[in-house]
Image (cartoon, rainbow, N blue to C red; front, top):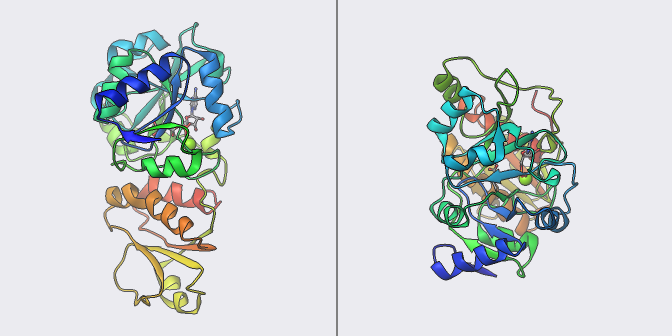
Length: 323
Ligand code: TXA
Ligand code: MG
């Protein structure tokens, strides 16, 4: 059931469900999350069951304030506090050493924990009132596209779930994950918070971690896949090939304006600005899936660093690795 996330009665109902160990879908600024009380192992188990997610994939714990950081993490390095001060609430997840009491199912048995303070007013209000930690992966079936609207959640997980509708997600792709659990800081998953922004705050160069010992299910091919067969094409190839495609079953995602589309074509034209493009990308993929496109052709965006996280998601949607 979809309810307005800002209604006090909806927030109260969500808190009651979380407290008694049940699931609720919540809005965040990145994507919608499937939430459970992270301190209750039986509640967390329901997340894995509903999503059909392997229990070897650890979850992100969402908290409402910096004061809660030390409830969940120990030996928090100075650099992590600097990042938290700069970017929380926001689209950033920090990997830290976990407090001993944290249920093993949350961290998939690892000694580290993923923590985030999301920047969405309804989510923050809920987390502050709940005053605990909320484990929340993206609110979709395992390997499917992440949801950026309440309707996407309902489509993937059904209408029995309480879904707090906080409007379309404003960032639109998942948070940047930064590993601060060892001596060296590195980025495990790119997001709209870029390596440049992180490096600037830390005053040192931070890189993407290529091959991590840490389990990163997000790095599986086909992790963010739409149902349709998704292919990435250069502008030139798209401009010459689109007219020979079966327009009834082919969807297109573009960002440039100079392709002479037939009015019959299923086209999602996104912004040429990377933040706006990222905000709308999953919505466009969901939309073309719902139009039952057999294939989706995506015009490759520019290869500048500002587009890095978008490229990573597009490559995953197409089942490719990023160079
Ligand atoms: O934007 C987001 O991060 C969204 C919203 C709901 O907050 N959540 C999200 O959750 O994307 P999920 O479960 O789809 O992705 C979480 C990622 C997974 O790739 C998981 O492997 C990684 O976080 N992760 C969690 N705990 C970890 C840990 N201790 N070490 C390394 N990676 C971890
Ligand atoms: Mg996910």
